[in-house]
Length: 317
Image (cartoon, rainbow, N blue to C red; front, side, top):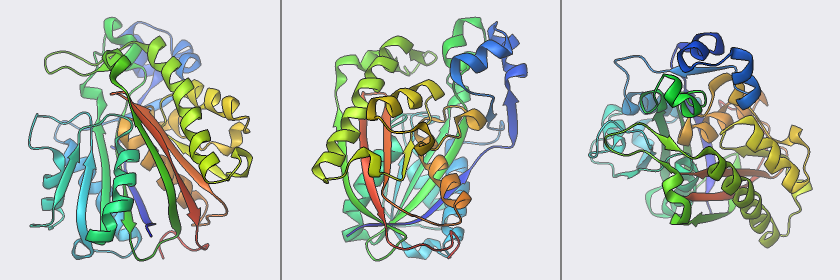
Protein backbone atom coordinates (compact mmCIF):
# COMPACT_ATOMS: atom_id res chain seq x y z
CA UNK A 1 0.00 0.00 0.00
CA UNK A 2 1.01 3.61 -0.53
CA UNK A 3 -0.55 6.67 1.05
CA UNK A 4 -0.42 10.43 0.61
CA UNK A 5 0.65 11.72 3.99
CA UNK A 6 1.43 15.44 3.65
CA UNK A 7 1.42 18.33 1.18
CA UNK A 8 3.35 21.59 1.19
CA UNK A 9 4.33 24.43 -1.09
CA UNK A 10 6.31 27.61 -1.45
CA UNK A 11 5.61 30.62 -3.67
CA UNK A 12 8.15 33.44 -4.08
CA UNK A 13 7.05 36.78 -2.65
CA UNK A 14 7.31 38.84 -5.84
CA UNK A 15 3.93 39.13 -7.56
CA UNK A 16 3.99 40.01 -11.28
CA UNK A 17 0.53 41.01 -12.47
CA UNK A 18 -0.68 41.48 -16.01
CA UNK A 19 -0.32 45.24 -15.84
CA UNK A 20 3.42 44.82 -15.24
CA UNK A 21 4.02 42.00 -17.70
CA UNK A 22 1.85 43.05 -20.64
CA UNK A 23 3.93 46.08 -21.75
CA UNK A 24 7.11 43.98 -21.72
CA UNK A 25 5.69 41.51 -24.23
CA UNK A 26 3.74 44.03 -26.30
CA UNK A 27 0.13 43.17 -25.42
CA UNK A 28 -2.75 44.64 -23.45
CA UNK A 29 -3.42 43.28 -19.94
CA UNK A 30 -7.02 42.44 -20.90
CA UNK A 31 -5.84 40.36 -23.85
CA UNK A 32 -3.40 38.48 -21.65
CA UNK A 33 -6.13 37.53 -19.19
CA UNK A 34 -8.51 36.48 -21.96
CA UNK A 35 -5.87 34.36 -23.69
CA UNK A 36 -4.68 32.48 -20.59
CA UNK A 37 -6.99 32.97 -17.63
CA UNK A 38 -3.93 34.13 -15.67
CA UNK A 39 -4.10 37.32 -13.58
CA UNK A 40 -0.68 37.16 -11.92
CA UNK A 41 2.29 34.94 -11.31
CA UNK A 42 5.24 34.76 -8.90
CA UNK A 43 8.89 35.36 -9.81
CA UNK A 44 11.80 34.08 -7.76
CA UNK A 45 14.24 36.55 -6.25
CA UNK A 46 17.73 36.80 -7.75
CA UNK A 47 19.28 34.83 -4.90
CA UNK A 48 16.71 32.01 -5.03
CA UNK A 49 17.41 28.74 -6.83
CA UNK A 50 15.38 25.72 -7.88
CA UNK A 51 16.86 23.87 -4.89
CA UNK A 52 16.14 26.66 -2.41
CA UNK A 53 12.50 26.92 -3.53
CA UNK A 54 12.19 23.15 -3.30
CA UNK A 55 13.71 23.13 0.18
CA UNK A 56 11.19 25.66 1.45
CA UNK A 57 8.30 23.65 0.00
CA UNK A 58 9.70 20.50 1.61
CA UNK A 59 9.96 22.19 5.01
CA UNK A 60 6.35 23.35 4.71
CA UNK A 61 5.29 19.83 3.78
CA UNK A 62 7.14 18.09 6.60
CA UNK A 63 6.12 20.59 9.27
CA UNK A 64 2.47 20.36 8.20
CA UNK A 65 2.45 16.72 9.25
CA UNK A 66 4.82 16.84 12.21
CA UNK A 67 7.56 15.03 10.29
CA UNK A 68 11.28 15.68 10.35
CA UNK A 69 14.14 14.95 7.98
CA UNK A 70 14.88 11.80 9.99
CA UNK A 71 11.53 10.38 8.91
CA UNK A 72 12.36 10.49 5.18
CA UNK A 73 14.01 7.55 3.45
CA UNK A 74 14.17 8.86 -0.12
CA UNK A 75 13.96 12.20 -1.95
CA UNK A 76 12.61 12.57 -5.49
CA UNK A 77 12.94 16.02 -7.06
CA UNK A 78 11.29 16.98 -10.35
CA UNK A 79 12.32 20.07 -12.28
CA UNK A 80 12.67 21.11 -15.90
CA UNK A 81 14.33 24.43 -15.11
CA UNK A 82 17.47 23.52 -13.16
CA UNK A 83 20.35 25.96 -13.35
CA UNK A 84 22.85 23.38 -14.63
CA UNK A 85 23.14 20.01 -16.35
CA UNK A 86 24.25 18.25 -13.16
CA UNK A 87 24.06 17.74 -10.30
CA UNK A 88 20.32 18.26 -10.13
CA UNK A 89 18.46 19.78 -7.18
CA UNK A 90 17.49 16.53 -5.42
CA UNK A 91 20.70 16.02 -3.44
CA UNK A 92 20.95 19.74 -2.68
CA UNK A 93 17.42 19.74 -1.26
CA UNK A 94 18.21 16.68 0.85
CA UNK A 95 21.41 18.26 2.14
CA UNK A 96 19.67 21.52 3.00
CA UNK A 97 17.13 19.52 5.01
CA UNK A 98 19.88 17.68 6.89
CA UNK A 99 19.41 14.39 5.07
CA UNK A 100 23.05 13.59 4.41
CA UNK A 101 23.32 10.01 3.11
CA UNK A 102 19.63 9.72 2.18
CA UNK A 103 19.31 8.74 -1.51
CA UNK A 104 18.02 11.46 -3.82
CA UNK A 105 16.73 11.03 -7.38
CA UNK A 106 16.33 13.78 -9.99
CA UNK A 107 13.52 13.75 -12.54
CA UNK A 108 14.45 16.38 -15.17
CA UNK A 109 10.88 16.61 -16.39
CA UNK A 110 8.82 19.72 -17.08
CA UNK A 111 5.13 19.87 -16.13
CA UNK A 112 4.56 16.12 -15.67
CA UNK A 113 7.46 15.60 -13.28
CA UNK A 114 5.48 15.73 -10.05
CA UNK A 115 2.95 13.20 -11.35
CA UNK A 116 5.70 10.79 -12.36
CA UNK A 117 7.38 11.41 -9.01
CA UNK A 118 4.23 10.56 -7.05
CA UNK A 119 3.71 7.40 -9.07
CA UNK A 120 7.30 6.27 -8.54
CA UNK A 121 7.12 7.12 -4.85
CA UNK A 122 3.99 4.99 -4.45
CA UNK A 123 6.10 1.99 -5.44
CA UNK A 124 9.43 2.90 -3.90
CA UNK A 125 7.94 3.69 -0.47
CA UNK A 126 7.68 -0.06 0.12
CA UNK A 127 11.47 -0.16 0.27
CA UNK A 128 12.28 3.34 1.57
CA UNK A 129 9.41 4.20 3.90
CA UNK A 130 8.46 7.88 3.64
CA UNK A 131 9.36 9.28 0.22
CA UNK A 132 9.56 13.06 -0.14
CA UNK A 133 8.52 14.20 -3.61
CA UNK A 134 9.49 17.78 -4.45
CA UNK A 135 8.72 19.68 -7.65
CA UNK A 136 10.43 23.04 -8.04
CA UNK A 137 10.60 25.40 -11.01
CA UNK A 138 11.96 28.84 -11.87
CA UNK A 139 10.35 29.21 -15.26
CA UNK A 140 10.69 33.00 -15.37
CA UNK A 141 14.38 32.53 -16.24
CA UNK A 142 13.66 30.26 -19.19
CA UNK A 143 11.53 32.71 -21.21
CA UNK A 144 12.16 35.95 -23.09
CA UNK A 145 10.45 38.94 -21.49
CA UNK A 146 9.99 40.79 -24.77
CA UNK A 147 7.54 40.64 -27.70
CA UNK A 148 9.48 37.77 -29.31
CA UNK A 149 8.87 35.67 -26.21
CA UNK A 150 5.23 36.66 -25.75
CA UNK A 151 3.65 33.23 -26.19
CA UNK A 152 5.67 31.70 -23.36
CA UNK A 153 6.31 34.69 -21.09
CA UNK A 154 2.60 35.24 -20.51
CA UNK A 155 2.13 31.72 -19.16
CA UNK A 156 4.88 30.86 -16.74
CA UNK A 157 5.67 31.57 -13.11
CA UNK A 158 7.85 30.17 -10.34
CA UNK A 159 7.11 28.02 -7.32
CA UNK A 160 7.56 24.67 -5.60
CA UNK A 161 5.37 21.95 -4.16
CA UNK A 162 6.03 18.85 -2.08
CA UNK A 163 4.30 15.68 -0.95
CA UNK A 164 5.20 12.82 1.37
CA UNK A 165 4.20 9.36 0.16
CA UNK A 166 4.20 6.72 2.88
CA UNK A 167 3.92 2.95 2.98
CA UNK A 168 2.37 3.07 6.44
CA UNK A 169 -0.36 5.69 6.75
CA UNK A 170 -1.89 8.83 5.31
CA UNK A 171 -5.10 10.64 4.52
CA UNK A 172 -5.51 9.01 1.08
CA UNK A 173 -4.50 5.71 -0.50
CA UNK A 174 -2.82 5.72 -3.90
CA UNK A 175 -5.12 3.30 -5.71
CA UNK A 176 -3.53 3.31 -9.17
CA UNK A 177 -1.59 5.38 -11.67
CA UNK A 178 -1.11 5.44 -15.42
CA UNK A 179 1.98 6.97 -17.05
CA UNK A 180 2.61 7.57 -20.76
CA UNK A 181 5.47 8.91 -22.90
CA UNK A 182 5.86 9.53 -26.63
CA UNK A 183 8.56 11.60 -28.35
CA UNK A 184 6.64 12.07 -31.62
CA UNK A 185 5.86 15.69 -30.75
CA UNK A 186 8.77 16.20 -28.36
CA UNK A 187 10.29 19.05 -30.36
CA UNK A 188 7.14 21.12 -29.87
CA UNK A 189 8.06 21.92 -26.25
CA UNK A 190 11.72 22.06 -25.36
CA UNK A 191 14.38 24.02 -23.47
CA UNK A 192 17.72 23.82 -25.23
CA UNK A 193 20.95 24.57 -23.42
CA UNK A 194 21.67 27.82 -25.24
CA UNK A 195 18.27 29.32 -26.03
CA UNK A 196 14.98 30.29 -24.36
CA UNK A 197 12.01 28.00 -23.97
CA UNK A 198 10.45 26.97 -27.28
CA UNK A 199 6.78 26.03 -27.42
CA UNK A 200 4.55 25.34 -30.38
CA UNK A 201 1.42 26.26 -28.48
CA UNK A 202 -1.07 24.91 -31.01
CA UNK A 203 0.55 21.46 -31.10
CA UNK A 204 0.89 21.24 -27.33
CA UNK A 205 -2.69 22.26 -26.57
CA UNK A 206 -4.05 19.81 -29.15
CA UNK A 207 -1.95 16.94 -27.82
CA UNK A 208 -2.74 17.73 -24.19
CA UNK A 209 -6.47 18.11 -24.86
CA UNK A 210 -6.52 14.66 -26.46
CA UNK A 211 -4.10 12.70 -24.32
CA UNK A 212 -5.04 13.85 -20.82
CA UNK A 213 -8.75 12.94 -20.97
CA UNK A 214 -7.88 9.58 -22.55
CA UNK A 215 -5.39 8.77 -19.78
CA UNK A 216 -7.86 9.79 -17.08
CA UNK A 217 -10.66 7.77 -18.69
CA UNK A 218 -8.45 4.68 -19.07
CA UNK A 219 -7.33 4.90 -15.46
CA UNK A 220 -10.89 5.26 -14.18
CA UNK A 221 -12.18 2.48 -16.43
CA UNK A 222 -9.70 -0.07 -15.13
CA UNK A 223 -10.69 0.93 -11.59
CA UNK A 224 -14.42 0.62 -12.43
CA UNK A 225 -15.07 4.25 -11.57
CA UNK A 226 -17.07 6.69 -13.73
CA UNK A 227 -15.69 10.20 -14.18
CA UNK A 228 -18.80 11.60 -12.54
CA UNK A 229 -17.92 9.80 -9.30
CA UNK A 230 -14.62 11.68 -8.91
CA UNK A 231 -14.83 14.32 -6.20
CA UNK A 232 -11.99 16.54 -7.45
CA UNK A 233 -9.56 16.67 -10.36
CA UNK A 234 -6.15 18.13 -9.46
CA UNK A 235 -4.49 18.92 -12.77
CA UNK A 236 -1.27 20.52 -13.89
CA UNK A 237 -2.24 24.19 -14.08
CA UNK A 238 -1.12 24.85 -17.66
CA UNK A 239 -3.78 27.41 -18.52
CA UNK A 240 -7.48 27.86 -17.91
CA UNK A 241 -8.54 26.82 -21.41
CA UNK A 242 -6.88 23.40 -21.19
CA UNK A 243 -8.59 22.66 -17.89
CA UNK A 244 -11.92 23.64 -19.44
CA UNK A 245 -11.34 21.37 -22.45
CA UNK A 246 -10.45 18.37 -20.30
CA UNK A 247 -13.56 18.89 -18.19
CA UNK A 248 -15.70 19.00 -21.33
CA UNK A 249 -14.07 15.88 -22.78
CA UNK A 250 -14.85 13.95 -19.61
CA UNK A 251 -18.37 15.42 -19.36
CA UNK A 252 -17.61 16.56 -15.81
CA UNK A 253 -18.60 19.97 -14.39
CA UNK A 254 -15.72 22.46 -14.38
CA UNK A 255 -16.37 23.02 -10.70
CA UNK A 256 -14.85 19.58 -10.02
CA UNK A 257 -11.51 20.85 -11.35
CA UNK A 258 -9.52 22.78 -8.77
CA UNK A 259 -7.94 25.89 -10.28
CA UNK A 260 -5.34 28.33 -8.99
CA UNK A 261 -3.75 29.14 -12.36
CA UNK A 262 -5.13 32.68 -12.19
CA UNK A 263 -2.94 33.41 -9.15
CA UNK A 264 0.28 31.65 -10.09
CA UNK A 265 0.30 30.96 -13.82
CA UNK A 266 1.94 27.79 -15.11
CA UNK A 267 4.61 26.67 -12.64
CA UNK A 268 5.43 23.58 -14.70
CA UNK A 269 6.06 20.46 -12.58
CA UNK A 270 5.33 22.34 -9.37
CA UNK A 271 1.81 23.37 -10.34
CA UNK A 272 -0.06 20.15 -9.63
CA UNK A 273 1.38 19.79 -6.12
CA UNK A 274 0.89 23.48 -5.32
CA UNK A 275 -2.75 23.06 -6.37
CA UNK A 276 -3.09 19.92 -4.25
CA UNK A 277 -1.66 21.71 -1.21
CA UNK A 278 -4.03 24.64 -1.49
CA UNK A 279 -7.05 22.43 -2.21
CA UNK A 280 -6.25 20.21 0.77
CA UNK A 281 -5.83 23.10 3.16
CA UNK A 282 -8.87 25.00 1.90
CA UNK A 283 -10.95 21.90 2.68
CA UNK A 284 -9.57 21.67 6.18
CA UNK A 285 -8.10 18.27 5.44
CA UNK A 286 -11.35 16.67 4.27
CA UNK A 287 -10.97 14.06 1.54
CA UNK A 288 -14.55 13.22 0.72
CA UNK A 289 -14.22 11.04 -2.37
CA UNK A 290 -11.92 9.80 -5.13
CA UNK A 291 -9.42 12.36 -6.42
CA UNK A 292 -7.63 12.25 -9.76
CA UNK A 293 -4.26 13.88 -10.33
CA UNK A 294 -3.32 14.51 -13.96
CA UNK A 295 -0.50 16.20 -15.86
CA UNK A 296 0.93 16.66 -19.33
CA UNK A 297 4.32 18.03 -20.26
CA UNK A 298 7.44 18.14 -22.36
CA UNK A 299 8.75 14.86 -23.63
CA UNK A 300 5.95 14.30 -24.27
CA UNK A 301 4.99 12.77 -20.91
CA UNK A 302 1.50 12.55 -19.42
CA UNK A 303 -0.72 10.48 -17.18
CA UNK A 304 -3.03 10.31 -14.20
CA UNK A 305 -3.12 9.01 -10.63
CA UNK A 306 -6.12 7.95 -8.54
CA UNK A 307 -6.16 8.53 -4.78
CA UNK A 308 -8.96 7.42 -2.47
CA UNK A 309 -9.56 9.06 0.91
CA UNK A 310 -9.02 7.10 4.09
CA UNK A 311 -10.66 9.43 6.61
CA UNK A 312 -11.22 13.10 7.17
CA UNK A 313 -8.86 15.01 9.38
CA UNK A 314 -6.82 18.12 9.85
CA UNK A 315 -4.15 19.08 7.28
CA UNK A 316 -1.81 19.60 10.20
CA UNK A 317 -2.66 16.36 11.97
